Image 1 (tube, chains in turn cyan, green):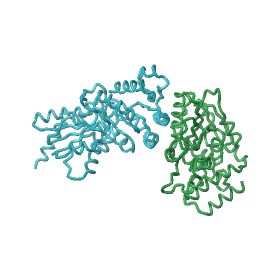
Image 2 (cartoon, each protein chain N blue to C red; image 1 turned 90 degrees about the horizontal axis):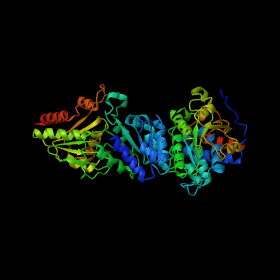
Image 3 (cartoon, rainbow over the protein chains, first blue to last red; image 1 turned 120 degrees about the vertical axis):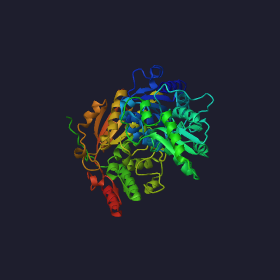
Image 4 (cartoon, rainbow over the protein chains, first blue to last red; image 1 turned 30 degrees about the vertical axis):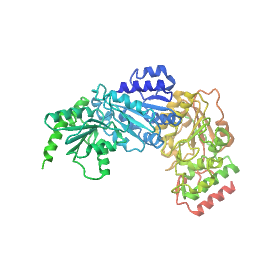
Length: 310
Length: 278
């Protein structure tokens, strides 16, 4: 997913002289083609996220479209004030491409896990937050950012994630994609967990429980109409995210349904626990521990439905 | 160890410097508050930039050929508002509404609201990085725009300033000038007690800057320091030795006058009286 994102930035830069790339201290060889072809628009500025974001703001003030790439935690926690003031307050078209959203960097421990990035960025006025499901959708998302006003945060998965994006889907920032029509249950998800939700839906279907899946690749601005329409008449609404429950997709969905008024379906929010992960291993391991793999998702939904029975 | 240059107070303020300070007092009176000391130390720096150095068009604030000035120490905005009003970016009468509900002149400057303000500042340690981005944009486009960023001495306690300094040095951004308003006082007290900066010139040199130290109230010295730098290969740091509250003897070098709220009419009168005497 990361390679696709960066390749897409290179393609955009070839055809649009406004595109510049700023990295921190990325791996050897990252963006070599970009650097070779457009050296005056390529910047690798060291382990200095505050400076990088401010510098991106300055370039954007002058009409450039900077794509900034580094690890998600460092691009959110470390330079939060620069993101808030330099990017969001000025409403500048800087694109933050964040490696390792969620628990991708499981073996590296909690300093490298972006478990609250969507919450803190969602809280900022003018910010757009996108979590694509796979490389195919990543390509569409990065391309779609080109002419979007204001800052955009793009959360990357691990790479090699199964592709669930289809050619017939019209990708538009802020527009949710209905992956599977709801039955009595509807799941709303984002990022790579949408793929887990689809597999969970297959498992539930095998038990005779029909569950739909709405993919909100854009967490902010949330597709309010799609969410409200999807939730209507459900026996159980489930939100699923690779993120703490506080302030993430589940919060955004609940906010939007509360604001709509009327009767709400019961909501089951599946998310990472309100704790720094204590284990290492792989992303899949941490998702398993948090009950966010297809099996546990299906089991928790089936149990909740049973408990709901009068 | 480089010894701190200590030149200020040798200069007697001329009419123009006093007129600009009166504009600051007009805003202090209108808003009943403001960063007095931090603004008064900046007056000559901004006066020289806008009178003699920057290519700018008050009637066309976004003119592409302009040089850029970023007030990174946003709390010194009254000095910026005074010079912008004086230059005709907006009517000086607006100063009287400083910090009131519907004014566009807040306690920190906002781009997009105030003609001539390049960046919204107030959170410290942001301006130099923004200035680097602006200077790199000019380099990519091969224009000769100069970029000036004014910072406070307390402000450069921020680590982000030094990230930016390293970056500017690496890029050899000769179009970039970092200005330090070195008035030796921060909010709590003297810089030498709260967080000493010396050897300050050596620090900037070590980060890849050419360095000039001047009396920040000496108009001729400032003109020379900001003069065009043909052939320069490094960014420039101009360390301006200034007096906090300059021009108001009762406020000079007194941390209590860093910021004041609930300013009384008699204090306003005292400020005007002090400026009468030069």
